[in-house]
Length: 453
Image (cartoon, rainbow, N blue to C red):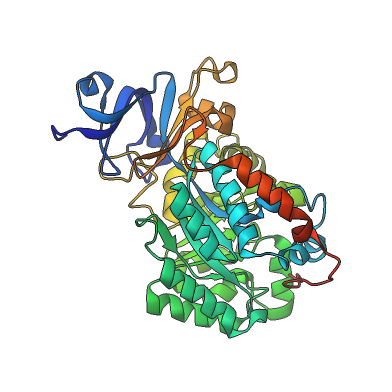
């Protein structure tokens, strides 16, 4: 450590560390430790006593708390918090065609901005420091990210029904916003899905990704019905469509993947790009889908699986703690094996693997010297988290989003002791409430797209 004054010292906490980032079971904790932050990065993790005399601009006494890497929400549609609870208890096709896509035809950039503000407030309060967003009017989302201090991986969604202009808008946004917000924004091309974007547009997207050094984020093999429909119509699974159109030769983040089947695994294993999958188990349970993301099979071929919430219109919350716990529980049920997925594996998915999934594996996802200081402090003094016999199990299966006390991104404190510092929730909620009648109007009969697998 240098002798000059640190920007931030967090002391007295247990710190989650990854001794071997490729082995989830080496996830462990250093007790009574301190984290020294300088210039937005972690400078050192030391014993609390070693940091007592270190000068710092700001200090946090974190006794009774655990310091973790900030959680990464690998796939969401942040502005859709405005539609939380609007489309309930519906099959996928009706959810899209009868409610969500008619409402989304009303969206204005201001609606998107307000939704993004509310979503960012929810995520900061829940310990999410970075999110991958796939939506419309993404300039508005980028502006919110720049203002509120979060990190984000953003893509402007498009359908083939929009013509070439949709793909061009996605590219234009990705090139303009890349590196914005002091480097906290990374960007991606964002075709919606193989069932709404044709092969020609997918191939064109792959070519643009190569030309401009951009990744791709899209929905694919979301559920088994989509895979079966693709096989019936085209003789190929959605994953095989991605391979045939060149997308798997780019860095690709696949949302959901509960429809990934056995024949897809060698296709994914042969991919020359960095391919990852984002899993949001709560939504799959809610839609009654018969399968979940095959995490164990993907792990066996080296495909990282990041955790996600999807949008709040389908998931009702942006609570990544719930996603983490459900991932462990649903995987145990799906595999019929209580030893899979362990609490330490779940923490690995929420941190290291999620950072890798959004292309930030060398930047965030671990608390280690040189990593950006994206950190959260979790209070484990409540009755629902006591006594602590196994810190990993307590964090995954007992702690809640509301136990996050402090959220830090790039060394900047965005929330401390549950008080948000960069967003004014009452004003956001008030204005959004005034705009909801116009946003929710479906009497016009329009849809932005048709869902037909």
